[in-house]
Image 1 (tube, one colour):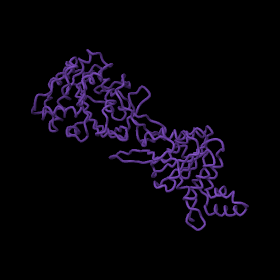
Image 2 (image 1 turned 135 degrees about the vertical axis):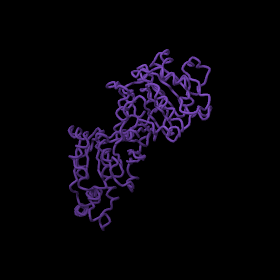
Image 3 (image 1 turned 135 degrees about the horizontal axis):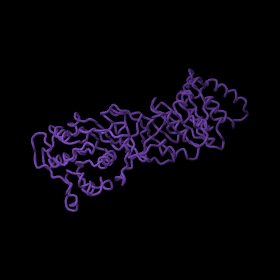
Image 4 (image 1 turned 90 degrees about the horizontal axis):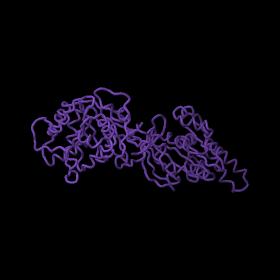
Amino acid sequence: MGAALDLPTELTHFLGRRPPQTLLVRGAPGTGKTMLALALIESFPGPRIYVTSRVHPSDLYADFPGLGRVADAGGLSIVDMTEGAGDLRRSAEALDRAERLVATDGHRSELRSLLLPPEVLEAWGRTSASTPTLVVLDSWDSIIDRYAGSSGTSASGLPSREEIERIALAQMARGPVFLVFVMEHRDAGQLEYLVNGIVTMERESHGDRTERWLRIDKLRGTRIAHPAYPFSLEGGRFQCIEPMKGGPRPSDVRIDPAPEQVAGQIWPGSADYATFFGRLPLGRLTLIEHDSETPLWAMNRILDPILSVVLSNHGRIFHVPPPGTHPIDIWDLYKGRVLPEEFFEQVRILGLLPHGESEELAPVMLPLPTGTIEGYNPRTPEAARFLAENQNPETPNLGLVFIAGLNAINSLVPGTYSPDTFSGMALTYLHQSPIHMITIGAEEDPLTRSLRPLAAARLRMSSREGRVFVHGILPRTPSLVLVETDDSAPYHLHLIV
């Protein structure tokens, strides 16, 4: 799965290039531009200068704790222009007087820097001629609008905004400076062509959930492996999510220990799952809906620790796998967690499984239904008897059903499972033994929709830009991203705020 990073890998590499370098960070208000700028400041190894025109320094320290650590270490200077700014007309008049004192034109280009806002000149005055320095102008729109003031930039004798930007870039090119422009306007004009890199910040709505995305539009000299990153601002910290790696199941499925045992509920094996969705109550059903892009292995990352908990507590599992699943794949779900004899005792499988080389797994395979049966009976009485044999609530059972697997059975035995009878059939299983059922299906499948009124919990999984998003419909949660973990947890659900 993806991993949570303070900065996209591409931006980290960009900050390691030889200066001078320029970066444009753009996006609408509230999309996280300032938080990204502050994350760049915290990650940069050399001197850092932050020119703020919108947020007072005291608020910056309160909202971004990492900034205080940088300041305490002596690596940060803040130029505050939230309460005032220079005046372009006065700067132009000062330049005119200075030019009259210069005997030759050789110094004219240096004098042109006097047209920059005084606060920007102050920032450049703090840079070093030998040490790479990061300068952040946040926001350039606000700085230039205040600086131009009521005189505007089209008045006679005054430079345009474009000319001021060219002067700033020329000034920057004289020293080892990384210059970051933060802007609200998506149409950045000439800066789009002059800067070395462009990052666009966006806030998107998917249904009633909000997601934040960072999109890398350009980074000269840097390979862009992943042009888009979802990110979160939880706790005043910028964190982005790398794409998932996927791949086969890990050989050792990790489980978060339960903080306490709760009668009548199954621990899901993940503290993050329990925090957002709760435990798995007996006699109830969890419905996991997914879009067509969600990979099977991502669903299995959530299911694996639940299976491990049930197996370790000596509960029984009735499993309807997705079509195309090989018997060896089913055994691999449990291999290493139980001995073969325990697997044959605790697990039963219903599905379209090939025969021949897997005859040794025949004892766990259930026969397919033979035809349409009226009413809400379990359709597979062998499975119902298998689960009913265990009536101990301290060793509860689990039903793990993929709707795609039931549809595959329907293709051979038409009418076995229908939206009209499926919910009643599920209730039949839920009432016959201490069991929790997890059903996984495509969100638009009629069988999936038929279970929605019955579900005690509903999760939705979707895949975008190589990341898997998870959010609760019941209970309702914000958007979460499934991410890799470097600790003992089976996975993490990273909150997007």
